[in-house]
Length: 65
Image (spheres, helix red, strand yellow):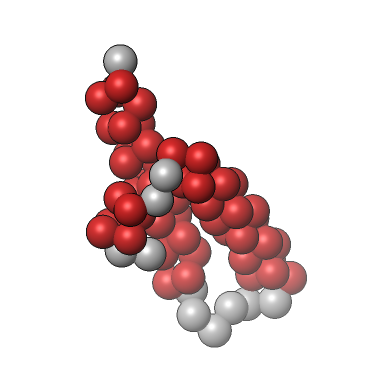
């Protein structure tokens, strides 16, 4: 997900998206533990997407204070 797309989401949508992405990351890690993934960069991309969304969420929350 691109930064521009993330910035267009509302705060509640962003929180829901973060939780969904975290669940997806956990599933991906579990699948990788059972049988190796073809594309290991999926884990890295998921972590970066989560970090990107958390950063934007914290910026919005700090801006409101």
